[in-house]
Length: 339
Image (tube, rainbow, N blue to C red; front, side, top):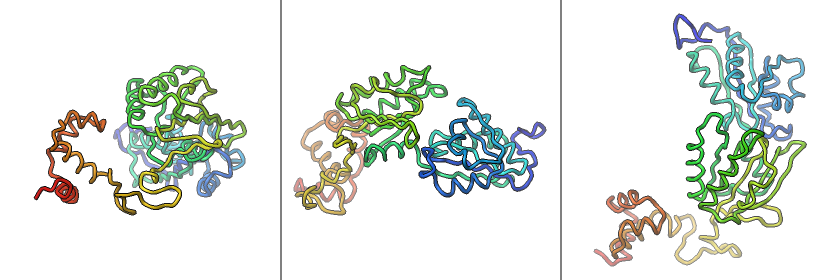
């Protein structure tokens, strides 16, 4: 793979080679982009995990197909590079999106290790696809309408303390959270630990959606709560969506409000007193800074303010030490009567 005489320098390649990192979405033809179909059709060689290859079986008849197992991601990337260096067009298949827990990262790592640059003769294209996050969310309603994150529970390559810190931070920050790779035949404790960490910060009644094999023949959807989450049927083909403190389930639909009710009456659309359409919320940055300084001037310590707003004391202290933004300074003067 490497040029032994010149490490880090890409060996000579036959022109015309290309690697397409293809995200096929959840796997159903109806949810695959036209570009993904075109790239797979144009490819000489198809490389991918055996399950993903089955999902595009109708598009790869007559092509060279390299099937790999679950833990052979680097082998897939190496094969893709070697075939592309021979002038072949290679489609490296990922379910969902190739750049979301997919093959895009390993492929670039292998290429850069071999001395690849965009000028070395091997073209690389990333073809986006709907990630499991999007696919599963669409099946249960609108759980991602506000801030969200995803965390993989796979500790095959990531130390558990790193995963645990991310889970704890996401739970404390009230993100809607999608858990990837939540459980397997050998990894059964990670989902329980994730539940424990979230229960430190969230109500046991927090809505949770369990989606298995989204848009595939064995699709299964289950609504539950954070308290009972780990009791559900969860495996490697499952994505777990944990709601935030405002998420609700009604009539079998999971919804995370965007926050319009903070500014508008949901029945008549009229703005609440003190709010203006198209302007930051009264408790947005400007309003918050104004109130923070006013409370501090009134005698509240930075430690008390940090506790009130659940923010790091160092951040509050630094914020109070900085000059106010012009609009916040004007508002503070108006509210306190200072000249």
